Amino acid sequence: MNIKDTNIIGHYINGEFLEPSSEMQTVYNPALGIGKKKVLLADENTVEQAIRCAHVAFPIWRDTPVAKRTKVMFKFKQLLEENMEYLCELIGQEHGKISHDAMGEIQRGIENIEYACSAPELLKGEFSKNVGTNIDSWSEFQPLGIVAGITPFNFPAMVPLWMFPMAIVCGNCFILKPSEKTPSAALFLAELLTQAGLPKGVFNVVNGNKIAVDYLLQHNLIQAISFVGSTSIASYIYETATKFGKRCQALGGAKNHAVVLPDADLDNVANSLLGAAFGSSGERCMALSVVIAVGDHIADTLVKKLKIEIEKLKVGIHSNTHNDFGPLISKEHKEKVEYYITKAEEEGAEIVVDGRDTKPLGYENGFFVGATLMDKISPNMESYQHEIFGPVLQIIRVESIQQAMQIINNHTYGNGTCLYTKDGEAARYFSTHIQVGMVGINVPLPVPVAYHSFGGWKKSLFGDLYAYGPDSVRFYTHRKTITQRWVSKNFIEEKQFSMPT
Ligand code: NAD
Image 1 (cartoon, rainbow, N blue to C red):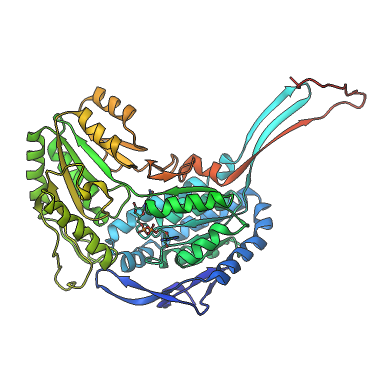
Image 2 (cartoon, protein in one colour; image 1 turned 45 degrees about the vertical axis):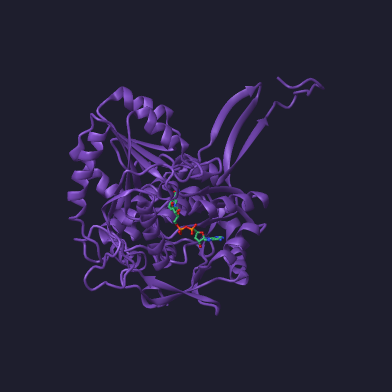
């Protein structure tokens, strides 16, 4: 059996697809509003089975030379590149994102595999000769054991790829619990890893919900948890994982602001805001969902330009690459996004373009919300305070950059932000003082490349180390520092009670 020919989405354990009888949940095609596929929800026995297989695989994988571990990743990257279109289709059917957007997601994931392929260099360690007479000292980076990743619906391939390539080349075994809303991509990645030569049990996928997650969080063989998802779950994951003695990084939600200064090139700003706000239906943790315009005339001009462009956007099915973005993930999520629009309207916002009631021809039952633009937002409105995670762009009007920065710094989230300006001094001031983890200057989606690390501040990240890049090498390894002395035969050790210096 293979992922290509099934409507029952099971698990991938010990190099094989498994479908033990268990509870199931419908996996929707959100553009159609119906679901033909069902995902199995792992019970504790199934998660235990995955952990046991990983436990058996670990000692051999740990002792496999890093160059051999990396070789599997090189092959995996090649297979992934050969199968990108099929993976786009899987993502499109379950998530709804348009194929060109899914391609971009996979490409960003592949960059993480490429970085993981430099593991022999990254794991070389640190060496100091003669730290004392005849004494050498070095630090090496050893794998943790079995580690787990729990991932969100919105990047079914990329977010898992932030995690497992690095964890695996570092010598760990990995258990992935993908989102139950978009589970197929992870199984396909698992199949490709096996084809690439990864030994059985090193990478396992268990589909499921809170039951599977809680079992992983509490299991004594799981050494570390990487989580990406909403802030309420991230804080729960961090608290529970650390209580059970695990290393944890838990990335949460966001509210990303763009500040537009009066000297910015407004045509370019408007164009770049469209993709950053509405791409992937705004279901990106780095989506720009708030624009703070400095000066009323900037806001007026921007609103006018955005309105014209937004009304041209095309919404629909993933396979039509003329569409700009697709549906939201579920009926409940569509209702939530529409609730925030209605609430903002009631609280005094001006709805410049209204995406409620969007029904693309032939897809009337899909979970669509069209691009929405709301002006005259104030920070006390509900739509501003919460993450909407939909195609909704809100405009706040202020008089100065300081006022804009204060609004951003006061927000609960601190994932990404962007300043549009031609003024280098303002840009430097902004990037130095803003309380946000990822900052763009004239770059609306400042998602770090794979050889930097990704993470926000405040309630956007719980834990000390960021996702992927150099931080992930530290996250997935233990440092061990060895101090060693070799002396000649006639050496006589002296007694020494003071601290060695
Ligand atoms: P979610 O928090 O609902 O789910 C994430 C994962 O947690 C899923 O695998 C899910 O099965 C599991 N989960 C859900 N409820 C749980 C519970 N009660 N106990 C244990 N596990 C549980 O998030 P989502 O809706 O899939 O994804 C959207 C969210 O993810 C948004 O808030 C978005 O900002 C965030 N996100 C953040 C980043 C980032 O890098 N900071 C990246 C992508 C998405």
